[in-house]
Image 1 (spheres, helix red, strand yellow):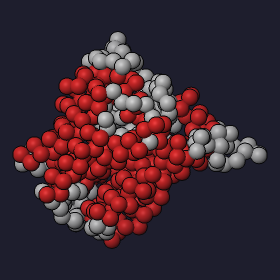
Image 2 (image 1 turned 135 degrees about the vertical axis):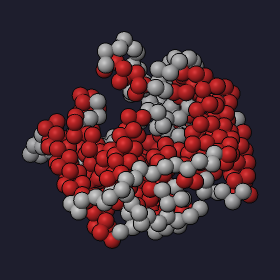
Image 3 (image 1 turned 90 degrees about the vertical axis):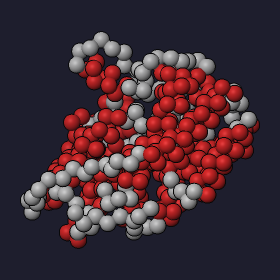
Image 4 (image 1 turned 90 degrees about the horizontal axis):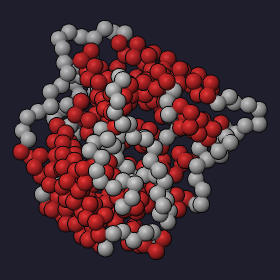
Length: 400
């Protein structure tokens, strides 16, 4: 009965088109879920049949996200920008690039410490390659981290957006070099999500700077997402069973995984343990006796299996259907408001919009709003600090 989801998505897109808001977050969200629902119906024989309660959660999530977007029209206050009097020292941009380069060298050194490159070892293309071994070692032994050097990655994301937002000619060369350095960071991080976030930041900033029409930017972003989704795991040697099955496992199977989970391991309710895992983890580090759920979820017992469960899983697991409705309404309202602020010459809002846009297009995959809360806090802190040290007074963004 996924056809009901398709009808809801089409209705939202038509309403947004009539309101001349086809590129708004609610429209993009509906288009993504329309693609998921249609693919699920076409490939239904190879997928599990969704039960009505799972479909109801999806319908509520999509509808409340759109309703939140409508309600955000009543939010009229503007997002303030970090600013101060006085200019930044002339060596600020070279110093910023130097710090990022040192951080990249530290990440590279730690990666070579984790996995020694030996004679006869291929660099890419298999589980036994250096890159594949690095991926496995990072996850199995180091929780995906290079230690203190991993904290440079959020700074590099912020620096790329900051320099691309700056209209001054002196920042252009730094923006190009910083983009290359940041690509080095995300490459060593090995996960596809790091690369997808980097690509999203680039496209969102480019769209708002007017270098590419917003519609064309998103039209380019979607196929690029798919390419990264395939190429990244192929390089790391993590694709088996054919590219199409891999695509199905991560594009539509998360819905079947969610259905399986909500009737078993993710039965409601755990009252915030999953949604606010970052906060619980910090409290545990401070010595408080609080539960901390595993970051990596168990593999589902479905036809295609997988360990990703769509954006709805943590909110349903913690608070049931009401939690899905409340959080998706909040995300829809907040993202739509930020999207409007990004059109008002506000570099911080552009950066926030990139973060929310990434979480939006990953809804079919898994939650990226609260699960990456620690990373979002770090990125927003660095962007705010950069804007405070050296305010961008000449930013010029595409309106609308």
